Each structure stands twice: as C-alpha cells, then as structure tokens.
Image (cartoon, rainbow over all chains, first blue to last red; front, side, top):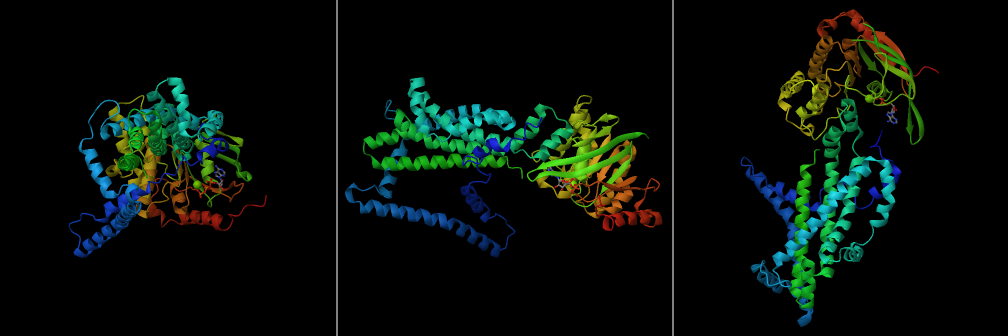
Length: 309
Length: 263
Ligand SMILES: Nc1ncnc2c1ncn2[C@@H]1O[C@H](COP(=O)(O)OP(=O)(O)OP(=O)(O)O)[C@@H](O)[C@H]1O
Ligand SMILES: [Mg+2]
C-alpha cells in the first residue's frame, strides 16, 4: 500500500506547471526583512556599528525610494506632454484621491457608493469564491496526491481546463445561475481552484520518505498519520497554493466586475470610464495594486509561521 | 537464550533508473535473544539496507527473515529504530516527537500522566530535559541524534535497531551514551543491532561483530565473537591485551580483507 509514492509520470507535467512554485518567500518580503534587520535596536552597540547599520538601512531604502521618485517623475512627464487632453498628473490625482477617501463609506443608492464599499465588495467576492475553491480544492488535492489512480483520472481534465481564461467561464455562470452575483463567485471559484489542487497534490506526493518511515516504524493510525505527518508536511505547499489562488482571484475579480456591474472596484472603474473621470481610473489602478500587495504580504506572513526549517 | 532473529539467504535488489541493483546477497545470520550485534563495513555496503529489512521497512527480494519464528511482514512497535538521519518531525518539539512514540505504544494502557513521565524520563536519559520544548531546527545535530535515541528507547522495544546512533557526537557525550546504552540493554534485555563505523565502539558494546564486504552485492564477510566479560569498563579495557587483539582483527578485516572475495 504505497499510496503516497505517486507515479511520477502522471502528475509530473502539471506539477511542474507554473502554478506550483518553489517555496521561496516573495522578493518583496525579503526586501522588507532586510529593512527590518538593517537597524537592530541594540543599546550596547558602538557608535561605529550604529552608523554602519544606519548606513546599511539607508542603502537598503535608497533603491526603492529612488525608483518611486523616478516613476512619479515619468508619470508627470507623460501627463504634461499630452497637453489638455493628456493623462492627469500625480498632483491632480492625489487631490482627487484625498477627496475620494474623505468619505469612503457614503451610500447614495445602488450605483453610487463610496470607494470603501466598492473595495469591501470586491474583497468579499474574492473571499467567498476562494473559500469555496479551498473547500473543494484542498480535500481533492489531498486525494489526488495520495491515490495514484485518482491522479491519473483527473490529470487530463485538469490539464484541459486549467489554461482556460477565467472570463470564459462567466457566460456559463450567467447561464446556470441566471444572476450576476453567483456568476462572479463562480468565476473566482473556477479560476482559483487549480493552484490549490495542484500545490496540495504536489505537497502530498513530496512528503519525505523519512517521515513516512517514522510513521511506519511507529505504526501510527491513519488519522495520526494525517494529523501529525501528512498535514503538517503539506502545509507549506498548501500555503503557496492559497497565496497563488488569492492572487489569481484578485486579478480576475476586477475584470469580472467590469462585465457584471453593480458594485465592486471593477464596476467602479467601468463607471468612471463612462463618466470619463480618468483620475479615478488611475486611483482605482493604485487601489487594486495596493490591496493585492497587502493580501500577498499577509499570506506570506502567515506562510512563514509554517516554515519549520 | 534462544534464537530470536533469523535471517536466511536474504537478498535485496533495488529497481533503479539504470536497471536492477543488487545491494545485498546471501545474508545469513542468527541472533539470540538479548544479544548485541554490531554491524560494521565500508560506506555504501548495505548496512542501512539490512537494518531496514529487519525493521520491515523493505521486503527482501529473496530469502526470509524470521523474528521469534514469525516472518517479518512490515514494521511494528516491537522493533524500535534509530534512523541514520535521526528523522525527527520538524513540526513537533523534542517532547512531542518522543511523546508520539510513547503514546502509540503505551497509550491504551496508561494514564496521560504516566505517558508524560515516560517521555520526560526518556529525555532525561539522553540529558535533554532542558530542550524538551525546542523544535529540531533549534538544536544541534548531536542533540537531534539523542532525541532519536530517546524516541526508540522510550518504546521499550524487544529489538533495538540503531543506524550509527552516535555518529555525530563528541567523544565525551558518545562515551556517556555508550555506557547508558549498555546499562539499558542489560536492564531491558533488548536484542540489539547497531551499525557503527567506530571499531572501539563495536568491540566495547557488542557480543558479536558482523563485518560486511563491500558492495555491490555485499554479504557478511566475517563474524567476530567478542568474548570479553561483562560488565565492561572502558578504562580497564584500554589496558586489556585481548581487547586490543579483537580490535586488531576488525581493523585487519576493514583495511586488508575488505575487498570482495572472488565470487
Ligand atoms: N532505495 C534504494 N534504491 C536504490 N538503491 C539503493 C536504495 N537504498 C540503498 N541503495 C543502494 O544500496 C547500497 C547500500 O546502501 P546503504 O544505505 O544500505 O549503505 P550503508 O552501508 O548504510 O552506507 P553508509 O555507511 O554510508 O550509511 C548503496 O549502493 C545504495 O546506493
Ligand atoms: Mg547507512
């Protein structure tokens, strides 16, 4: 009963797919870490060491700061070269953003809500769609990783469906559910389930033989094997899957909301385009980026909790 | 003392990418209950493979292994194993790693308090009480090995299988654990198979030394009876002529006769 020694051939192709990434923390996280450790708060440190560490902190902060400044300069350049009909510049966008965030939670009926509401709606859809995907994807991933036969069965289906563009699923959702809300959840669900399944399955099939030998020598029960060996060993892979999954969901939600309308960041972008309010579109792009970055950072932090080495 | 472990014409062939690889061939060995066997041989000759066969982690390609007149079919808690690479679970503390084993063996019969005491006693035996709540990543290689030893001993197995258990230890710790091991084995009457690269350790601890030829297709080259009286004292033995004679024989095998006999 070597259920865990998975046949390499069957799943190999999918598991080497770009969805399954090695367990290295995101570069952003590493940059943040160097920033943190750059100035250790040691009271006993010599003045020399202090200036040195300050210097290191400075040189770590320098490249990103410089990059941002150049980015804003370039933006300014592009907008001023366009004349009257050019892109709004940084200053104008900033003023507009201040006005927007002065009252983020107003509610003037169905098509006119504060930016806070729109962000929350998008986040809610991502959470719900991803939650469903996790509910189905994690157990499925465990079973695929543990049973070679099952993995052989589903491998072709996964390979076929995974490359489909998320929005191609929207008409199916609209047709089946007859409503936009469940249809957009469906799109999130179907596009974020693949990384979860594949990473969980990869994790299960890569549980080190040493740990399984321990389980066998101790003659652990199936339940103990699952809770004490399989699950903890798969957890880092699972966290990678979740991170990728939420990343995909966040990418997809804006596009889906543009098509379905009603509420959410995507809808807001489309609405502001119809109003020709380009500042707001730029602001929306920043919001999408910043929220996505925060989601990613949060998940990296959680994932680091499960890094045993 | 009756025959306890019986290995009869065991052969181990691995399927590798480059075809079949014969690691062990024609292994015949009979071990009495309570006997201490040291396995010695050059790296890669198949000592771990032989231990895995007795543990039941692998099945022999040919031949048969009997434990107490029953064929070995898979592992069981009657055989405690100290792995060469310690194999501690990185997400459990030292205490947790040992407790997992204790719970499995004694869980049905004893109270939670007794299980806790057993775990703590095992930790104390290897002088690691202070590291009970540490994760394996937070302790040294030698400490990990000691936790692995404690885990196996805590199960009070009838057969103790140890794969270079003292390999990564400094001389002092090694000596103290060797003495501890002699005492425990004396007390529990466990039948012991121990892989080692250390000739002194082999002579000091064992009743017989099984010397293996080089692989591939390694087999047992010679078996040396260590007829030194027990209890043994390492300081007294250092002066003992017979001890040095035995030691010399193992060395001679390893460095002169170790090459495979023309087959
Ligand atoms: N699962 C396996 N598949 C293929 N070959 C194997 C496998 N396990 C061991 N071998 C081979 O069998 C031989 C014996 O290996 P083994 O680990 O038993 O050696 P060893 O005597 O324990 O060495 P060391 O002293 O270095 O630990 C080696 O040549 C090894 O490459
Ligand atoms: Mg070995």
